[in-house]
Amino acid sequence: MSESTALGGVPVTELVERFGTPLYVYDGATITDRYRQLRERLHPAVRMFYSLKANPNISVCALLHSLGASAEVSSLTELVTAERAGVPAEDIMFLGPGKSRTELTACLKGEVTLICESFGELALIDELAAELGTTARVVLRVNPSFAVKGSGLTMGGKPRQFGIDETALLAESDLAGRHPSVRLRGFQAYLGTRFLSEAMIAENTARILDLAERLGRHLAVDLEVVDVGGGLGVAYFAGEQDLDIAALTDQLNPVFAAFHARHPQTALVMELGRYLVGHSGTYAVQVRYVKESMGERFAVADGGTNHHMAAVGIGSFVKRNFPMRLLNRDSTAEPVKWNVTGPLCTPNDTIGKAVELPGDLRPGDVVGVDRSGAYGPTASPVHFLSHGYPAEVLIHQGEPRLVRSRDDVESMLAAQILHDFR
Image (cartoon, rainbow, N blue to C red; front, side, top):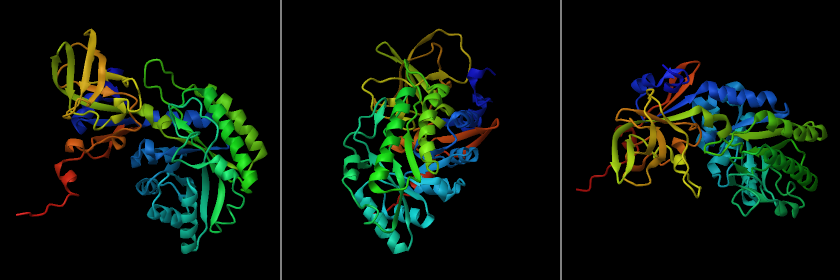
């Protein structure tokens, strides 16, 4: 067995034989290393929250919580996932611009901190908390007036559904007084995602901390919590470079230290999703057919964009491939360009365009899409053409563990209701 034909120390042939394909494999050692490397270098006043949206698998969440991570959730199911993974309510924050009454009520009953994204939501939280005879724990999400720098996908600094505009908050005079069943705990700003510049992350963080201080003074809010967001990136494409954690923390820690000296009682929060789990995952598909069409080679596999929509390059003007490789065997054949496609009846089902793979690629081979631990099946149209979810496996201390069963015909039809129209 060579390193290239194993995942997490387990031969790919063994994984395929036990769990089949298509298959997501997460290396627990990689997740652990990513968390610990940052935790060991990051200022101790900063709490690390795992953003379940990146990968909401309950075992992935449980592993990160066992390492010390808190949880940031965005739906009722994610909230229950975090709770069942062992995360206590005081270590959970719930955010999202369109929370339902049911979700808000669950957070209020469980004393989970809510990140509030609009004045209308704040009024509803106050109303529900009064009905329950409790006091809501609320952090206000701010949409800053300043422009965001260095983000692959901006989520603030422009007209957005996220957060309350900085100018609108500065126009308020008695926000707390008008919401007596709410305890305003602080502020959050999430500016964007896929940041790959250490300097830009440090600059954006400094500006968020300054914003929180100004708003805290204006609204007379004791800064119990300041959440600087996150968005630390993963390098997927040619020409990109992963963050240097030593360089990042060397620039970030003085910013946090200065703020902490002024506000020693304030809990500083950083939200991390893709950064913690992205490197850990491999999406493995088995080649069913190889063919040539008008001078191009095609490898038609048993899984595609229905499980890995991120590989399509959504949001990019130019289609770029995630790193891909042959997994089940070593090959000395000269690399040639292959289009790797899935089983869907759409030309868009291409997870790799002109990917360099061995020229002797053949049916039965297993191709892997690396760096696929974030925004995989749950960010994809898994039920398109009724193929269903793939299996998911987490390798922990060298042992592969099934952490999500593969959908089958009966599981996919179970929620449907057949009526007799005769």
